[in-house]
Image 1 (cartoon, rainbow, N blue to C red):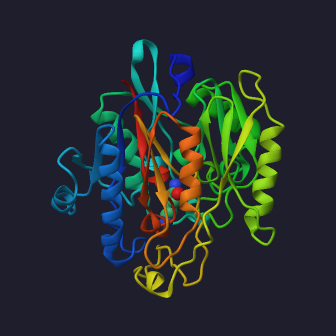
Image 2 (image 1 turned 180 degrees about the vertical axis):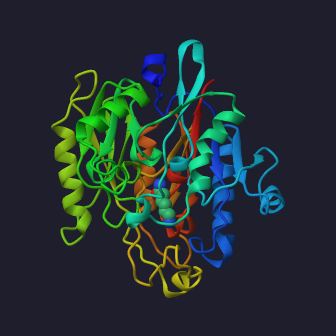
Length: 364
Ligand code: KQY
């Protein structure tokens, strides 16, 4: 099997030019409350926001095709693709660029964030086919990877470095018995990077077992934005300090020390009784409970051509004072891009956020 690295392919940084963005339409009622109607409105708002900056493709089941088409702007391409849920970051391919700008992609094996040990649903066979279908639609070269890794578990700087969290990529529920060295080899071979930067834990309560894209991301080579907590009573206090220390002690692929920028966490958010009751109970579903804390983070944003599409949480009834502070951080770090904040509580209720539901396709 030729690896992407051997074939001259690598994953570009998210801030590089995009040919477009891929998303998946939500519909499973045991993850998205009220038959996924509020989530569909939130996903449509994200798709509409991104479509102002780059082409968007929405993957939709046959049963939802007409509804999605009606709720999305004409500019959004709607294609029928069967899935188990709606996390394009994790089940979609990781797009790569190769010699002469050739498009390729990694098709990571997917096991619903933990398989039969403590994965989030069963089955996940349709999700595991999504990457191959995307690459088929784009006639792009497909590289099936040998280890389970989700797109939300990696961030690259486009200059040879990948950032990952031990809690997630070394978790036995993904690849039982895999060693750090074996994982590093696969990340290097399939992302075309030469250096891995490790942090320990992800955001507490994140049901992905600590995806890096909810905790931290590169904002440019040498600079990492970290979700930060100043309340010693909050479990994220120790996690953010530990991650900062690890990052400040690391070097990137070019030998640079990393600069860490702090992004304040949103005010803690919890499922209301009404929200939890709106999720269908099924044997393989998510079983939300009133009062359960959600793993909210402003770092879970999408970098589009010319814009940052970021979550905000200050919807009516849920006073969240941190949205303005997050906007200021993003505007300072991305002065050349529009900052577009989209209400994202309905996405958060499903267990992720804007970065988790989007997948950039590199290219001009
Ligand atoms: O955050 C993500 N990347 C996926 C979260 C999956 C949650 C399923 N309920």
